[in-house]
Image 1: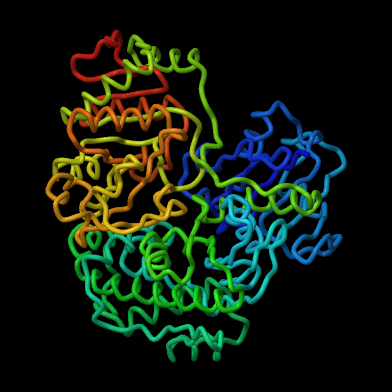
Image 2: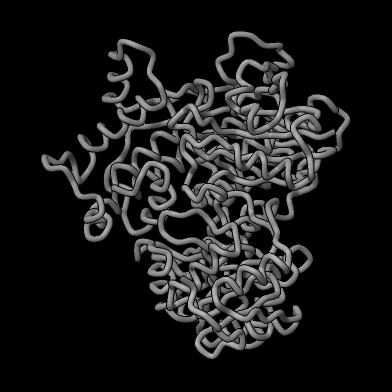
Length: 582
C-alpha cells in the first residue's frame, strides 16, 4: 500500500512548515520539508509542491500510482465522505493542494483529510515503539483546538479531551518569543535557551488544574476574549498575549518603536527574567496536563507532539518527574511531522492489522547524492575531489577536530525535523569555550545561545548526571546536567545552568558518525563533539552539496568539509584548489 502524506497550503499566507512523505506498506520510505528545497525558513505560504514531487520521484512514482493521499489538517470542506471520526475524504481541494499541471491528472483524486492533532498523535505514537501510551499534543492550534489528550493502544488512538485555542500554549510561548524580539517562529527555541539566564521574578496568571481539567487565563486576556465581537482565533490569542506581556511584565510597554536588531544585540538581558517566567509557566502547565493524562489513562508511557514538544527543558522536567516511566517525542514534533502522521493514520485506518512501527532509529528520510553528483559539485567550486575510505576519513576528521578545526559534515540522507543528528552538522572540539563563539559567528546566531553535544551513548553517564531517556536524548529533545568534573573539560557545550541538550549516538545506528566520535575520544579522552545544525542565518539546513560548498568557501572559520566520503580541508588541502569559484 502506497500512501502520500503532506501538509501545507500555497493559498494560505500563514500556513507554514510544509512537508511531504511517502509511506509504503506502513514504512516511512521518504520524507522532506519544503523549506529544504525553496531555501526559505518555515516555507510560509509556499505549500509543499516541491517536497511532494521529491517524494514521488524518490520511488519513481506518479500520483496515479498512489493508493491513498493523506493531508495533515481537516480543512473546512463543502462536501466529502466521512471515513472515520478523524478522517474525511474529498477531492474538493485537490486542484489547489496538488495542481493538475504539476501532478498530471484529469480527474482529481480524493485526499483524506486527517484532523491535525490526530496526525500529530499518530506520528509520535506509531514511531515510539510502545504498545500503548498516553498522548499529549500541544501546539498553536488545529481546527479550533490547541491541546488534545489521547490514549493509544495497538493500532488505535482514542481522543479523551481537547482544549480550545483560547488556552493555546503555542500562541502563549510564540508571543513571548516575539515580545523578546526573537521572532514568532524562531523565537520559542531561542527563548528556551535564554530562560536559564534569568530568574522567575514575576508570576504569570496562567494555570491548568489537573483535577478539574480547566485552564485559568489572566484576567486581562479573559476579558479580551469575552469582549471580542467574534469568536477568537489563534492569531487573536497571540496578539492578546503580546498586549498582556507588554502591559504587565518587565520591561513593560514602550512608547517608542523598538529596533529589534538592537534588542537582540544589546538588550536581550532585559528579557532573561521574562523568559524564565514564561518557561516556568509552560513547565508547570505541562506537568499538570501530564498528571491529568496519567489519571485518565493509567499509562506508564507518554508520547508528545505539537510545536511545544520541541521544548527540551519541559520534556526533561516531565521525564525527571516520573509521572510516566518512559517518554518519547517524534523529532519533527512541529507541523511538518503531520505529513508523516497523516499518512500513518490512513495506513492504519485501511489496514488495521498492520503491525506498529518499531522505535524510530533516526529521522533520516531524505535525499542522498551519488558520487558523480558530488564530484561534479566539488569540481564546479574549483577543487579536486579526494575520496577516502571510511577508516581514513574517520582518522583525518578526528585529527582535525582534535586540533580545533571546525568541520562541515554532510553524510547520509536528509534528516527530517529541526534537529541535526549527525548527517547535516557543524562539528567541533568542545574543550574550548571559544568554540561556542566561533560557531555562533559562523551561523549568525546570538552569542548567548548554547551548543549541543553528540555523545557516545555508552559513555554518557560518565559526563552527564541522572537518567537519560532515549526517547528524548536520542533525538536531542531533552536536557541533562553536566557533571561538575566535566564542566571545565567541555566548556563549549556547558550552558549557564550547567545543562546541555545532549544527543546520544549509538554504534549500531550511527555507523561512521559513532566511529568518528569514538576516534576523537581515543585521541582526546573526550567522548563527545560539538554538534549544531549545518546552516547559516536565515536559511534551513543544507540540502544539496552546492549549499554546503557555499558555506565552506565563504566562511573562513570552516576549515574542513566532508561530503559523503569526499574530504577537503584548509589551508593545506590535499584536494588542491584549481580555479576560483565565481
